[in-house]
Length: 331
Image 1: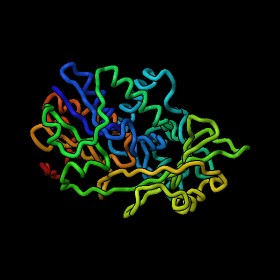
Image 2 (image 1 turned 180 degrees about the horizontal axis):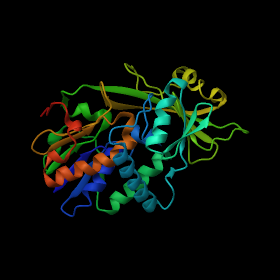
Image 3 (image 1 turned 135 degrees about the horizontal axis):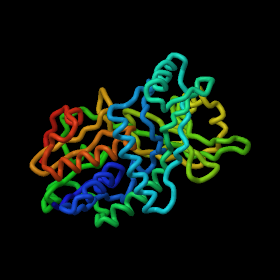
Image 4 (image 1 turned 60 degrees about the horizontal axis):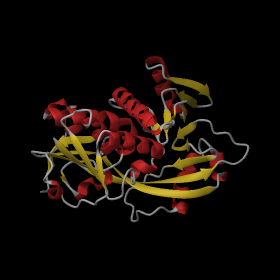
C-alpha cells in the first residue's frame, strides 16, 4: 500500500513510523516547509497528562503518554542523544483548584504537593521538540520513508497513491471542507536568557509556562492564545503584553528575563472540546487534525491507531470520540 501523508509535524511523522512497522506499506511525506516547520517545530514540549487550566486528567492520557514515550525512545536511539528532560514538571495551582491535584495524588500517584501552591508532576517531561523531530525523522527515513518538500494544493495531485492522509495541522482546511467546527489559535513563544543567580531546573506551568531548553541558560516563555488574529508574524511587544500579566502571578521574575527571540505559529482545535478529529472521509482519504495544544500527548497514540485502521481498512478500530462529526470531502 502506497501512502501519502500531507504534513511533516508530530502527527505526520508518528503516523509514518507506525505505518512502516507494516511491510505492506510505503510512505511518502509532503510538506513544503520540511520537517517540523510549523507549530510542532516551535512547541515548548511540555508533556504531561494534566493540560488545561482545570488540570483534569485528559481523555486517553495514559495511552497518549505511553505512545509518546515509545517514540521518544526511538528518536533518542536514532539521534544518539537525549531529546527530553524526564525530571518532572512543576505546576502552580490556585487554592481553589488544589483539591483536584490532591485527588490526582491519591488516585494516580504521579503528583506531589511541594508547598506554596506548587505540585510536582512526576510523569511530566520537557521534550526538546526540534531534537525530537530530527531523531524521529531519522528513524522514519531509515525505515524507507521519503520526504518531498513540495506544497500540495489539491488532494487530486496525489491520486496515484492508494491512501492519502491529511495531517497538516492548521493547513487542513485548505484541503477539506470541514463540517466539524474548528478554531485557529495563534501562539507566540519568547526565547529568553536566564539571568545569573536564577536556577531553573524544571519547567514551570501556571497560566502560561516557562520551559527549560537543551541549551543551558535559556528558556521558552509562552504561550499566547490568540483568536481572531490578523497577522501570522511574531511580535515581541504583543507577546509580552499578553504573557507577562499571567506569568507574573506565579513567577514575577520572568519580566526580568532578556528576550532574544520570538516565534509564532497557528494550531487548530475543535470548538467546544479538546478531543482531536481523526476520520476516514472517502474511499482512500483520511484526516488527522485538531490536536490543538495536546499534540505531544496525542500524536503517538493517534498515529498508532490510525495506522492500524488504514492497514486493516477498518475505521471501527478508531475510538468513536475521534470522529463524532460529519466531514465532507471537498473534491
